[in-house]
Amino acid sequence: MGLVSLASFAGGAINSVAGGGTLLAFPAAMAAGLPPIVANATNSVAMTPASLASALAYRRELSASRRWLALLALPSAAGALLGAWLLVVTPERWFARLVPLLVLGATALLLWQNLRPEVARDAPTTPRHRALAVAVQLAIAVYGGYFGAGMGILMLAGFSLLDLGDLHQKNAVKSVLGAAINGVATASFIVSGKVDPTLAIAMGASATLGGFLGAAGARRVAPRTLRWLVIAIGVALSVALGARALG
Image (cartoon, rainbow, N blue to C red; front, side, top):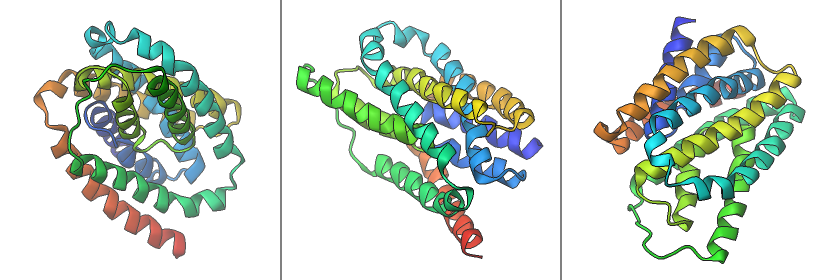
C-alpha cells in the first residue's frame, strides 16, 4: 500500500506539471495485485480528485478560460463515456497484452512533447479551428476514458488550435477537462464493478495531495526535466510489461 500511495502522489504531482503520471500510478496498482483492467479503472478513479486539486491551484488562470471550457466540456464527457465502455467490454487477456503497447505509446508522447519546439499561437481562433479542436478533444477523451496515460500531453497539443493563453492557462484547462474525463469514466467503472474501492481511496488521497502541491509548485519546476524522468521510467516499464505479457 505504501508503494502505491507514493506512486500515486508522484503521479498526481507530475500530471499537474508535465503529464504522464499514470505511468507511475497504474503499474503500481498492478504490482499491488490488481488485474490490468481493474488497475486502470482504479487509477482513473484516483486521478479524478487529483485533477480537481490541480484545477483549484490554477483557479486564477481559469477565470480567463471559461469560454474554452464551455466549448470542450461536452466532447470531453462524451468521449470519456465511449472510452470507458470500450474498456469495460475489452476481454482481460486482450487488455493485458495491450498494456505494454499503451505504456510505450504514452512514453512516446512524452518524448515527442520534449523534442518538439514550443509553438506560440498568436492568430485569433476561427470557427474552423474551434470545430477541429472539438473533434480532436473528442478523440482524446475516448483515449482518456480507455487508458489515459499521456492524455494531458495530447490535450496540450490540441490546445494549439485555440488562442488559449500561456502554459499555465493551458494547464488549468487541461486539469479541469482531465477531471471531467476521469470523472465520467469513473462513474462507468464503478457501475461496472471494475474498481477496487480500498485502493482507490488510498491512491486518490495521495494523488490529490500530489496534484495540488504539484500545481502550486509548477511555476518553479521545469516540465521538460520531469518528462525526461518519466520517459526513462516508461521505457523500462514497457520492456518489463512486454516480457511479462509474453512470458
